[in-house]
Length: 457
Image (cartoon, rainbow, N blue to C red; front, side, top):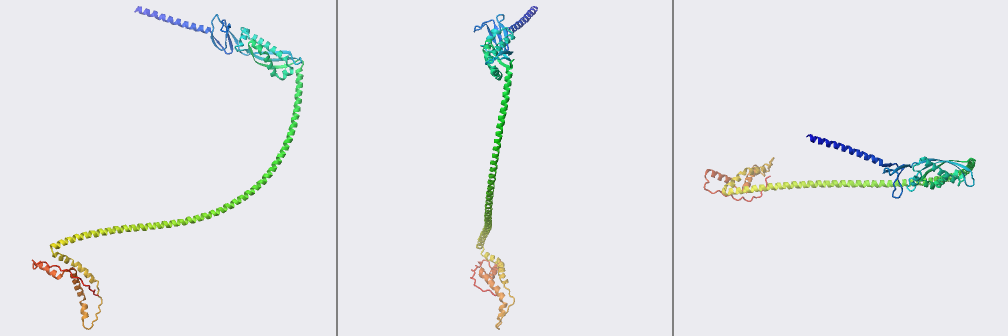
């Protein structure tokens, strides 16, 4: 165990040592990398010299970005690409045959060119030089160009056309600045003057000419304004006259159109009134026709209603009569059936008992007598006047009238029914007492044909 712990301790110490050593190596590598790497800003140009490139140059350039530099072998220099302001003051004789000394002051902005074809000239001339040296060279170059341009132009041209003067100066020194590896951003001419006050006199003359021109221009403009005003007034009067004439013409035409419109309106109103009357008449006729049609429709409807009512009533009466007739027919049919059945039973009874017919007829006698007596009862004898021929027969005949009526009534029953009531009574009595036993019942004689009798008054 002690050996194992010792071995473990040794391994732990070795791991710590190795880790610390690795960290030191990494930090040393990062420090070396930071030392070897160079970062350039966009506003400066890095010149790494000491090693030839593919083009055979002993340096290489970098504007913005980063690159690795081999220590001892390569060296890094920086050239600023910012603008440098250069003051200018040049005294030279103007050209154009005047030979007047002119002093020009101004300011120019210059910088090292970043173009690949030009910046090598600046590296060759200004690498390791301070910025003041570049400013001095730029100023001397610009002043030389100003002297050359002043000697070609008259003072009037320099004063009157500053833009042309500046453009001519920049064109004059552009090639010289490219050779220096520099570029001109701008040139501003601040003042141009001379000791002999030539430019001042020129200015006074120019101002006088300007004032004279201004006065002349003002007079011309005033004259033109007066002329235009007069012309405008004339045109205005003419336009006013034309407008008045047009207004009068328009007024006359308006009155004419108004009169025509009034006449047209009256005509339209009259036609409208006429059409209105016609329309009213047509509407009245239509109303009358509609009323007549309505009355006719009402009459037809009433007629149809009455017809329908009568038809319905007739149909109802027909149905009632039909039902009543069917009921009566059914009743008659049933009664006939019942009578036929009764007659059939009576016939069978009569065949079995011959005297039964006589008994039945006897039972019917009270009803027959009542009916006969009804006829006798309807004959009233109030006051009978008997006229006798002297023989005394009329009184006896009147007294025996009712007895004769009863006797004739019984005879009528015997003739109708064919039954002799007296014999029938005797036979029935004999049967009841046993006298008629073993004798055949008397056959009913056929009823005699009734004779026509005259009713007694």
